[in-house]
Image (cartoon, rainbow, N blue to C red; front, side, top):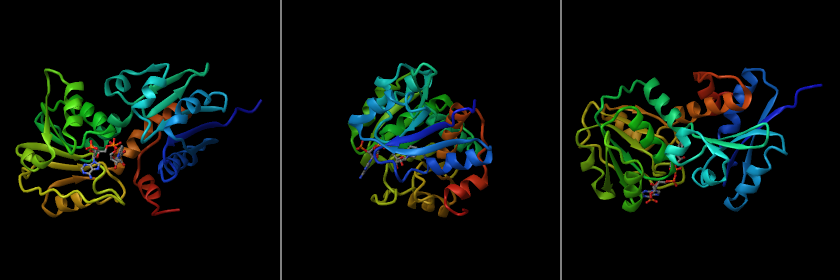
Length: 280
Ligand code: NAP
């Protein structure tokens, strides 16, 4: 009897501009796997029903994106340790009995991107701009990398305070910072990460001077559309190490592909070029 084709998807609202089908499609082709990966636009009110029906519809799993990552936690039958600690799910694995396991690979993707781009953690301080869903995974990752202090600057200070409370631990000082103090808060840091949507295509620019940033600091913008955000352009022009956000997207997808299709794929320049539309 032929094996059923393995199917996976990206679930978001909206989801049709997601790069994930292109990314997984590249790997399916490269690995010679007879599988499928599609975009499934799903409004929040339909998420639970969609996830519960995945097994009947023959899906081995899905990735989740905005706005579902945090709400999905309550729908899962189980959560792995990382998803539980972060409080968000971006990978749902469907068991043989239809059960749903929530995992989080965003922290892994963020860490891999930084380390493979040359950032060496020095146990110092980081400034994270933003306190939304992505910031949760990034704060978790920075704590695992051994940073001793994380400053969180956010437009809505209460969201930064909530994150500081959720991730409080004696090993790492987490301080909420008022948005207007984001420039001052760069003093003495080794890493600046933008996790806000400012600078993304269609969004306002992130207006931030890097005057107070130490010369040895690294700047990472997790936005990948555009690839070269105004923040990264400013950082490069001033001689800071600058890391774009595409690598995070590619690396977070690796454990998902492994869970869906049983192969550990590679993140290569050819993949980057293909996902960016530079090759057909
Ligand atoms: P989110 O939960 O909606 O959070 C958005 C954040 O941006 C919040 O902190 C919000 O502040 C802030 N913000 C929005 N508009 C602002 C404005 N006009 N001025 C100041 N701050 C503003 O979104 P998310 O899931 O964290 O994603 C954030 C960005 O990261 C998106 O661009 C997304 O594409 C990108 N991302 C990239 C990857 C990757 O793999 N590279 C992965 C995940 C996300 P408030 O709290 O005040 O609303």
